[in-house]
Length: 411
Image (cartoon, rainbow, N blue to C red; front, side):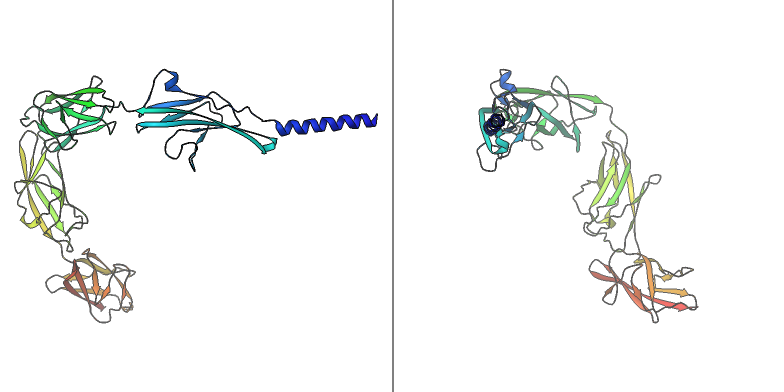
């Protein structure tokens, strides 16, 4: 009996061994379906989302959408695993033909054996996109966005005293292949000017020849009377500028600008802001943020409201001295330097017992470099010996401006 049982055991073991060795864990079937083909659409449309639906089986099922880097069979091609998902999204923005491939793989014998099969469907992507994403007009120097309605009307509101209807349109189309025209004349965003006094119709044609028409529509409103100057600033980091911001005296219509000693009145660019829909004239000429201005020659800044009325501001330009305050850090009480602009001297009294060989000066004023001899000084940091008077050189740009003699007197 023992021999019989032993023989049966051996037969069962051999049978299980060969069964595991040849068995593939999950049937290999790379079948799939693409949603647009399932729905009877012959081609994929650029910009649309579609889905690859897994209809087969496999231990590992991978989608290659046919885009560069994801073409099955090419070196280093990569795909996306379905994992537990029954479908994966595909989207194409560029027209052309793509090979969509699903690869199904299963293993057996604990990974020693594998079977892999692939199914490929070639699809063609066409571009029927022909819609404006945005549309604006430059009206009286201001960029005004139009409202695009469901019936393809582009609506604008303009003041009822408008007499100039020649505007340049800026627009974005949802496809780079679409063409925009008015009565067959090609339109270039930000370049082409048209007269909008009468109705203007834009035609947007897709790469496949699909056409969408848009009509520009205007409504009017009473023009604004607002004409207030709200900001006057030197553009930071431009010639002669340290970004100074003027204080605007609205009551007296005066622009009070204190120019730092390190800045130059000749050559800075300006940042000017005013009431909505107003415009600004400097000395009678339209303001430009790209122009260099000579500040001490500005006699008027005029803000013109949308209705044509205006307000005139005058400029009060002051040039700051190189040093406004001077003291020493770490001393109690903090000494106050007496600055004599005429003689260009600074006298600082300190208490008896103060070590004047190791004093750290703190000052305000020029934003340009300050040096003692060839040594650059940093306010609140640099240590100096004030046993004898020390000469501070205040620079203007790369040139030395005024020099001040600093004397420390121990009381």
